[in-house]
Length: 276
Image (tube, rainbow, N blue to C red):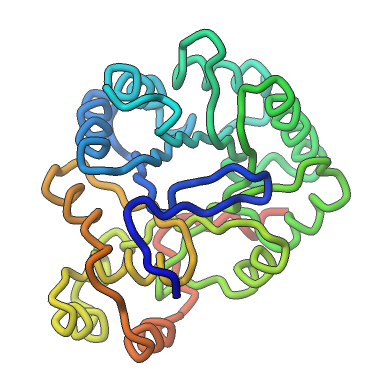
């Protein structure tokens, strides 16, 4: 396995390079998001993941705008959360995140397949148009199951670059992972730390003790070694920094096998991959 570092990137099927370790702002209140993202950027993160449904895109944009790091060095993702007024909502998000002339989003995702089979192609066409306009560098989906991805083969002129789904040792979604890997669709892992609900799991705590790392760092490292793009989140400075400190150790094959053996298809988030 190639040595991983904070500068490791994955090249998407569109040719766009995405930093493998991301930083999520789900449930970060707007009043703290700008400070949280600023802290993350100072800690070394260069990939920020937001969404229309998070109601903090504008605050993410403010943190990036007011930072000395060039916009071109920060990768920003957001997600379309609605089936109506799609074009208007897409443009609103771009403006909130990057209000400059020629503003853009690095990756725009459809948040979930809940719009239904008639509207999903329309949403995707609007995203493809956004790419043509230079307002999105890459596009993809989130919470899409295999049937939704297979459906896309019939209408997508630009294939999805990413599928963002819940991924951690207790929820490994092997069918979706196998499909995405065989079709060169990168996998982003949300809730990579299981929202702290497995902090006392015996297997996890044993590996944390063996590595001298926290249970959270072990889970992020597992995701990285699986080739996923984990999106840890926190509004606490110490944890934001700690979650970045995952490049000075490596999980052994035996430790990876032990974590891989924990899969129970156990979701901690609403799972919309079964939507029609």
